[in-house]
Image (cartoon, rainbow, N blue to C red; front, side, top):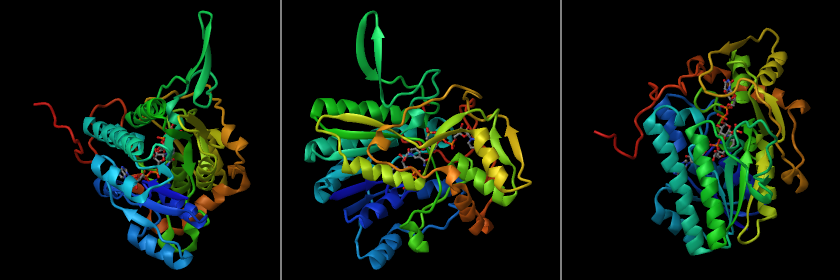
Length: 395
Ligand code: NAD
Ligand code: USQ
């Protein structure tokens, strides 16, 4: 199958591109390298060194005999998005290509505007390109479990049956996201669902939980094939951060009470879920949602699991930089991918150790200064980063 991977230079996009290529698909990668620029902007770096995209692709060709087509394209450039979809003629497009950090989107107005323009306009351009070039292309879009927030009822997979004043309907599950980034995913979901309804497109919206881990079967083949591993307070996700903190002897930074609960998954399960979504495509006109996570844990539980592996590791509770419930009900359905055959890797299977081994291997590159949270949700302006605003400040 011809598959275009958008955001294929990123943490998840790159290993997914390799995995799909190894399965024998003809893979093209689209990326504008924005993620590498955020590193320069924030003064941080991936813990694991990453090769430039062309070097990665050359190494993959050498080792596997498979070539990867590279398109250095910004998804907010409608004409180029249309041209790439027309030229490559994909049967499936896997869309990872967005600004994905909640703290980054909460730095100030300019970062919130940048995030929403980048994500929502990029996805809209893509929807138009698919509708114009070939509406039968299956769009596999990365959404987030954070679209739902933490309601005091069970979370369903995308839709909920509601009976209201004697009438019943199946409606999109209510969304209460916790950042302007998470909101961009909600806006995307609405736009994609609408495009499926009016143009008969087909899409799978994967509401993914927090991913952990760094190595996959393919990335482990050569250092040039490694994917990034973020641990800083803006781009690092919670379990990856705790693993690095424990290895570096830095106290594990639990925000507030630590009762926040999240769905989590191993990076290898991200690849498996994408593969299942591609192999079992949505029907024409269908918009479906899969909740993509395998286990859920509170932040306290994660910190305790990591600390247990490094006797003496300290856990601190910081003043919460985010506005989120310190303790809440959390039970989210996630059966659709299991029904398609997903066999999860579980944290209890000793995977945490392997994440810590990666951190240990690169411990010389750990910058303790990158650990403390710098973005406070309550402030409209935080003093990190550069102005990124595509829309001018009012006079
Ligand atoms: P990442 O930042 O490492 O990768 C995203 C890639 O998209 C980067 O290479 C970036 O340069 C590219 N990109 C961004 N804007 C672009 C644009 N306008 N045009 C072209 N390319 C662009 O992020 P990731 O962790 O790999 O996440 C990938 C996707 O998965 C995101 O959509 C994210 O929201 C979603 N997701 C990630 C996680 C997680 O824990 N990492 C969890 C749930 C969902
Ligand atoms: N947290 C801490 N200490 C830390 C870092 C985080 O207590 O040092 C807490 C946060 O307050 C939050 C939870 O851990 O309650 C998760 O934070 P995170 O930074 O790991 O994850 P989040 O901001 O939700 O975003 C990440 C990805 C995003 C994806 C999302 C999936 O960056 O792209 O959409 O996970 S989900 O959380 O399901 O929405």
